Image (cartoon, rainbow, N blue to C red; front, side, top):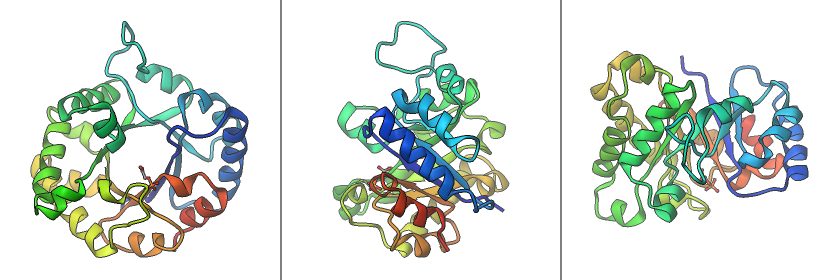
Length: 249
Ligand code: PGA
């Protein structure tokens, strides 16, 4: 059985004191749910404060990660730097990185491989744009993003990978994919992962849905057989909404 993972992506929000307060509140909100993982990905600058405030109840992730151990990579963050601050995971290939910063599948593949090499679990984000969905190319786009993003990844490394399906048209727009649309894509992704790796490996991999997840739609999304968790942006910035999402039923 796949353990559900609820992840909050704070993006470029919150000062250190605000991050500390929110992390403490989220840790408290997650106290009584033992059957699911709860993770937050704060801005790099808030990681030490968040680690201190959240204790051991929450998992932490970087919002991005470089493939090198160290060196001349201005503006990047090394896997070891994230691990030093208590991160066990890193978001890779978020649609904002792809769309606003020009990150390609091959660059994202280097990030995935680098994270794994240095002991971080990548959360590989993929998703189609509205134009791609309307053109009927959703599955083809996702297949390319998966194949190229996961090129060269070994079977043993693959089992721990997390994939996040985030349709670009649903991110920050209030327009969520329906539970049926999410399930259709997630089932397709698991089938593609089974072809890339092995069926039992694909069966172990967690596939999260992201894009306007909120307290009103989380229960139905999480009821879908292949939806193993959520990657939450806006609704992760308020403890009331994130608490309800953590407590999905
Ligand atoms: P959203 O963001 O929940 O605000 O749509 C999700 C994400 O970008 O991960």
